[in-house]
Amino acid sequence: YFDFTTTYSQVFGAATNDGNFSFVNSIPNDFGTSWHVGATDHTGDKGGYMFLVNADFTPDQFYNSTVNNLCIGTRYEFSVYLTNVCAESGLIEPNVRFEVRSLTAENQLLAQLSSGNVSQYATLTWARYGLSFIASSSAVALLMISDAPGGAGNDLALDDIALR
Image (tube, rainbow, N blue to C red; front, top):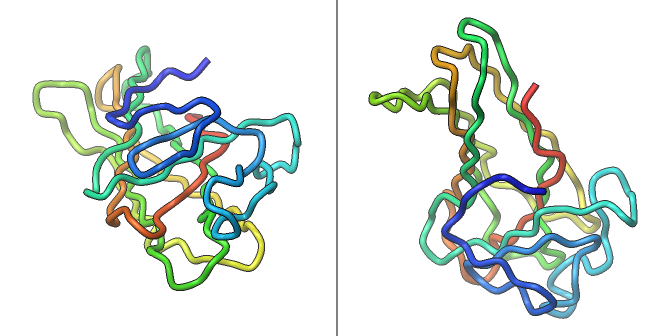
């Protein structure tokens, strides 16, 4: 069960092209050797799933999840494991902006973090990104936004998206 919205299209059993996403156990052979084919989620669990995103040509939001029933004044952490799935060098590197916004009329930005360019490595390399915030309302939106253009590269996988 995945509770989020996106403007991207989910694909099942087909290539995850620009502007598409899929949930996979291992990196598929969609683009030959340009991806880390066969690599698994950050835990190494062959049965575990990861969120595979082939970023759209225009930088855009690809993940929006609403969280309700937060305790006002409490500190929370929004975190995710992220990797660049490209095996070839010289391709566009993913750059993800993480935002937490209050779900009030003001749409207040409570916290923001940029991954910066996520480098390509010879083997699939996961990194954890997290940002903390203090809830100023009982509901927030957790957002992930691609700040890099799509095309040749900007292909990423995410795992263990969490709010603690």
